[in-house]
Length: 165
Image (cartoon, rainbow, N blue to C red; front, side, top):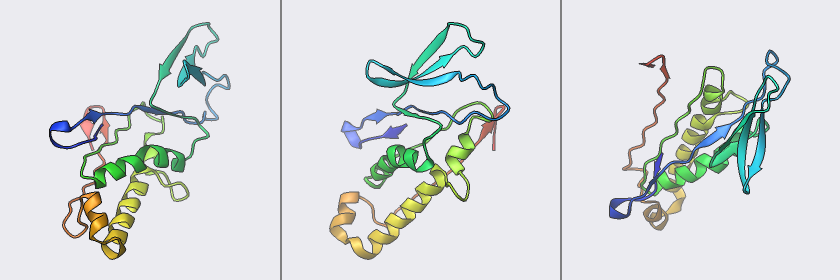
């Protein structure tokens, strides 16, 4: 969830996004997920993997296919949040799913494809360093942050079987 404003006019909202990971070689070749359009909104359709007729459709604020890159997700979902944080708002990213669903890959990534947390830290550091050197006071006032007098905290907490790590 992200707070989009401050004071009396503060609005709280959350975006719910879904990333469909590629099927593993050990998984059934019968596809049980597909992207559908429901009333012009992209949705995830889960079909019965046993070939039955039943299916469930879920709509999301952001929906990413197995072909979506870390960069795609970062630019669409996290860059706007970072702009809001630099404007003085709070933000949080929560990854939820079963073991093996791709949470760690999305958040941490790897050397070739850094995840959301790594990209966020790099962008914050870049913006702070760049603004401290060249932006000037007018830009810093717009951002409502002073790189020399700001507090920025990142945390990564994993909860597994009701234990936080």
